[in-house]
Length: 178
Image (cartoon, rainbow, N blue to C red; front, side, top):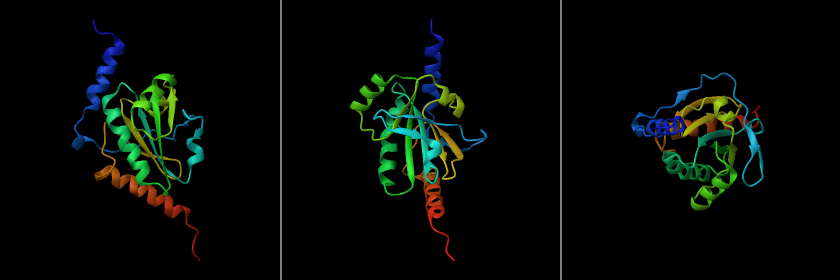
């Protein structure tokens, strides 16, 4: 007999196996940007509202989610490629404890701030319906779009969307010319 938890995990895994050519950015229809704050595993405090002026990728993931495990290094590369530009990438772990996440991070090359969403309230507020799920937030703090499933952040529609958000943040930070 399959438990409800196993059925949910299986559904998430099957949904996350969507072929890459079927992945599409979806415009945000969730209203105001949900709050997101917490302390990362290194003890640094994060608050999405304090990141205004920067484009932000918010990624929900879990250690048991194979597509998430594959995608986290791509997000690390994205963050590195955009170093010095107004972009931040925040990984939000879905429902797991610090010890398990720290053990996972010790085995994988992930150089991202990781927040824990132990009670899954943040995921519910953001409308996370499966993993991995990412949200693109503009420099004005408003969610622009979401994408579900493992992604290649270095090319195509997704790379272009991130580049536009970062370029918008750069333009917004320039002093007005007279």
